[in-house]
Length: 82
Image (tube, rainbow, N blue to C red; front, side, top):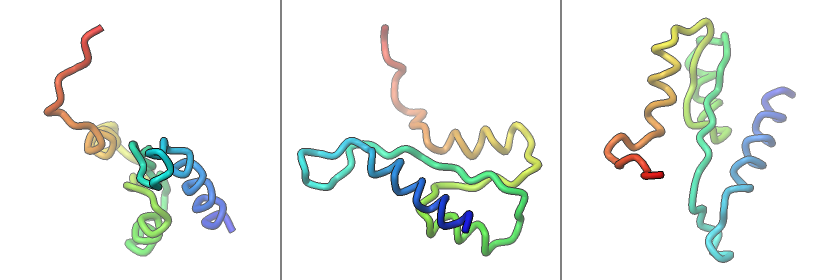
């Protein structure tokens, strides 16, 4: 049951992404990382099937979380000027 709720929530988050003039193409994507104490490969695959973008198993080290989040940032882009 919890997996169904997670899947529904994930769909709602990404349906809320800005759509390009009704073409159905998203202009942006909100990355979703799963955090779970379950370490089996099947759980990771299930998370990806539900539309999640990554997975961090608990307990985790700060560096593990940083690496999982950092892959969603384009480090080649210049920082915005204020």
